[in-house]
Image (tube, rainbow, N blue to C red; front, side, top):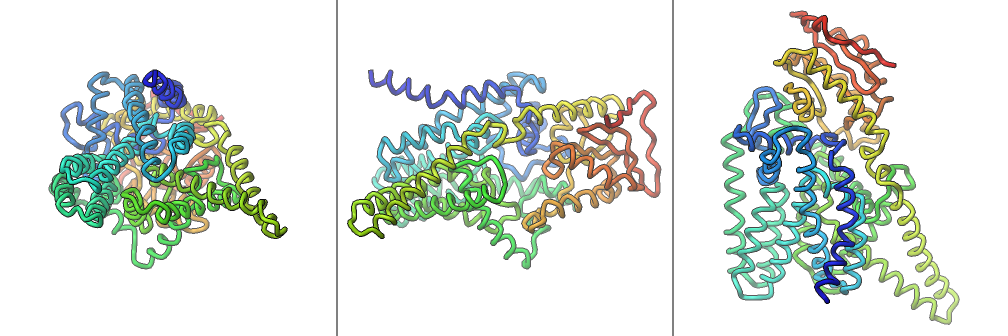
Amino acid sequence: MRILAYSLLGAILCAPVTLTAWRERNLPHFGVLVDDGVYWVTAKAVAQGQGYKIPWLPGEPWQTKYPPLYPAYLALAWRVNPQFPANLPVAVFLAWLWAPPLLLLGFYACRKLGLTAFEALVLTALFAVNPHFLYFATGIHTEVPYTVLLLGTLLALERASRTDSLRWPLAAGVLAAAAFLCRSTGIALIASGVLGLWLAGRKRSAWLYLGAALPAVAGWAWWAQVHKYTGNDSALIYHTDYLGFYTQTVSLRDLPVLLWGNLGGILIRGGNLVLPTPGETPPERFFSIVIGILAFRGVLGMVKRVGWSHYHLYAAGHLALLIPWNFPANSRLLFPLAPLLMAGLWEQFRELTVLGLAGLRQRVFGERLAGAAMLGAVVILAAVGAWRWSRPFGDHYPQLSEGFRRQIRGVQRAYAWIRQATPADATFVACQDPRLYLEANRKAASLGVSPVIWFRPTGRTELQDLYLKEIPKLAVTRRRRYVLLTDTEFLIADRQDLARARRRLANEPRLREVYASEDAVIYEVVSSAETAPSCPASAKLLKPR
C-alpha cells in the first residue's frame, strides 16, 4: 500500500514536466539559446564517427570548451534516429529522464538541510511546477543532468562524512567526476568535497574522493590542451576556449564591474529562480532582490541552526566562480543552487512567521504591531509571488509563446532560401550558428564580441551597436560570404530589433542585402578587393511585407 501511495505521489509530481515535455516535444525553440544547438550538433558528430568536433565552424575545430559527457549521452538519440528535426522528440525524452531523479534527490537534499518531511515535500511540489525547471528539463540543456549528479554527489559526501566506510567517498568521487564531465563548474564540487571531508576529520576519505574524481579532470585538461585551437579568430576562440575568451575580453579594470554586476545579478536571478516572475520591470527586479536577500539569509540561518553541509560548501565555491565571470549571472548558472535557495527562503519565511505570531501574543501594542507587520510582509510576498508565478509559461520564457513560434517559422523560410540560393561551401556570420548548420548545411560562426559591455546600464544597446558595427569587419577579414540576422537572437530579440538593425546596415558598403523578411535578413559580403558574385538568378528575393 505504501509503495502504491509513493508511486501515485511521484506520478503527480512528475505530471507537469511530463505534460510540458509532450507539448514541447518538437522543440520549436531549439537553438535559441545556442548552447542547446552546440550540444546537439557535437552529439551528431560523435554519433557519426567524426570525433568530438564542432562541424558547423569553418575549419571544424575540436570541441575543447564543453566536456563530452552530455553530448555523448545525446548521441544515443542520433543513433536511434539520424534525421533532423525528426529526432528532436527523442532528445526531449532523453532530457525528461533526468527530471524524476532531480525531484527525488531534491526532496532528500531538503531533508538533509534540516527540513521536515512535509516541508521538503511542499518545496519539491513547488519545484515541480517551477518554470525554470520545466524549461530546462524538457530541452537540450545540462542544467538538470548536472544538478542530478551534483545532488547525488552531495548526498554521498554527507554519508562519507559520518561513516568510516570507503564506498561512500569512492561513490561520491565517481559521481563528482561525472558532474565535471557534464559541466566544467563541477570543479567547485570536487574542491568543496575534499574540503568538507577534511573538515569532518575524514582525511583518508578525502584522498579517496579526490583520487576517484581527479582522473576526469586530468583527462579532460589533457584533451583540451592537446586539441586546443591556436588561431586568432575571436569567434572560434569563443566556441572552443573558456579561459582564452575570458583573457581576451576581460582586463583588470573590468573586474570591479564584473564583481558588482554579478553580485547584483546573483540576488536578482537567485530570487527569480526560487520565486519566478516573468518580466524585467523595475518592480519585478526589486521583488526578486528582496526574495534573493531572504533566500540567501535563510541559507546562512540554516548553517546556524543545523550546521554547515556539503551543499553550503559547494554553493560557496559555485558562487566564487560566478562572481568574476564575464557573463551575467542568470537562472541557468544558478540553477544547481535551486533546492538550497528554496530551502533558504522557506527557512526565512518560517522564521518571520514564528516571530510575527510571537509578536501578536505580546501585550505591548508596538510589539503586536511589529508582529502583524512581519506576518503581513510574508503574506504580501507570497501573494505577489504566486500571482506572478502563475503567469502563462510563455510569459516566463517568451521563446515558448505563440508569437515567437511565428518568428521561428519566418526564420525557417530564410533557412530554406539559403539551401536553395547559396553555394554549398558558403560560410556565414550568424548568431545561431548550430541551427543554421542543421537547417541549411552551411558552416557559420558568431562574432564572439566581449560580453563585458552587458554589465553597463545601457549594456544591451551598446552591445547591439558593437555587434552590428563589427559584423562587416569580421565578415570581410574572416572571409565569410554571407551574414544572417534573425529576430530570434540574443541581441536581436524581436521584429523591431531586426528592423532597427536593417536600417543600421542599409548604407554599409561591404554588405549587399539579398533576402529580407519580417523575421530574417541575409547579406552578401562584398570586400574592397573582390566583389562577391551575385546570387543565382533562380534565387527568390523576398521583401518585407
